[in-house]
Image (cartoon, rainbow, N blue to C red):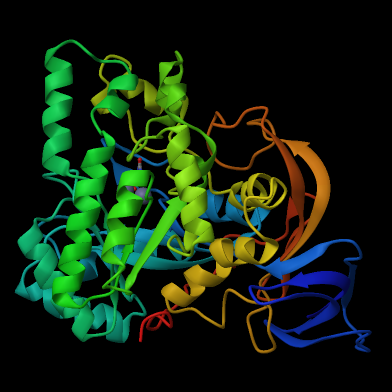
Length: 459
Ligand code: URP
Ligand code: ZN
Ligand code: ZN
């Protein structure tokens, strides 16, 4: 199949220019003015933006968590991602404590390979590190195309590893050219605050927020950076939410340039005042939403290049699942639905409201994730030879976010009624039409596993 996208404004990190883009098979073959190719399909992109498919490196699909499973699986989740212009996601394999990485990989392959509609890779979450797991880490990097390793400094007894394990893991990962990623919050402090609040009869969602004050994130973030510096390992902090944690990295980055930061669209847009509402459980996530001053700090961090990526931490639970914690905030499954709206949100809230440039928008939604996680330039840019993962975007179209129109398998939206300017119109995944006229044209199994290499952001 061949596709010719005509007269769009092509946007990359480096430039924006009016051009045609010609794709043949899975690849971009030519970019230029008035291209003279006969294509199976021609798309008129006049007055539209044409940019690389989004990459969301932080999503949880069919995730076993807090006594249930996140409500989007690989089929519904990657399809919703495509509707939102995200052509690739990186999801998390969770090692079971006491079990092998290979067993976990097998479980995740069964969840994903025949179900994914869009492309996907895996981070491997290390929840139990020892000498045998160290050998498997090397096998993941060298044989399986899994080059990033997720760690948790919280969720003790289920996902958390201690600092000794962290340092040993960093040494192995550094030696073999991978990267360690982290959920950086102080698990012990949080657990004691949760216990104290419950003992005092404080059971409402607001106490989820009050049990994870900013210092719990700032402390763990700084500690993680110090361990990176000590081991020389590159690292990536997921879902950073607040000024204190950002400043902890800012300070460490004076002597360590191998730290990358992701924030998520929700931390830039909504704040902790939502926890006062009767339906506050909808936004219970970890770390929790913060304050307006933190949003300002995060937007600044993006423009200063200290924050390189905006993901979603998509981890939806239905209202019935959220109800598991109606009498105890600590039992509310953590996470909210977000995979579908990240790109439209970052355009509408970021570019249109003049918080970030159009080029920065491409950088944080696609290109930097491709570079940090070893997929560039196959993914993350519009260039000859790259995968034809392309979004055609109407920058002026206004619409309203609603549970009635979203495609995520979740019976509420955390953004009901939110007005957005800019709409995903057409999406190509490796040269195939994925989304057109509000329909998905791909099926389960059309999404392919992305075997990743070493980060091109680390020397
Ligand atoms: O609340 C969240 N973030 N749920 C998913 C698990 C995690 O910590 O990322
Ligand atoms: Zn997390
Ligand atoms: Zn997460």
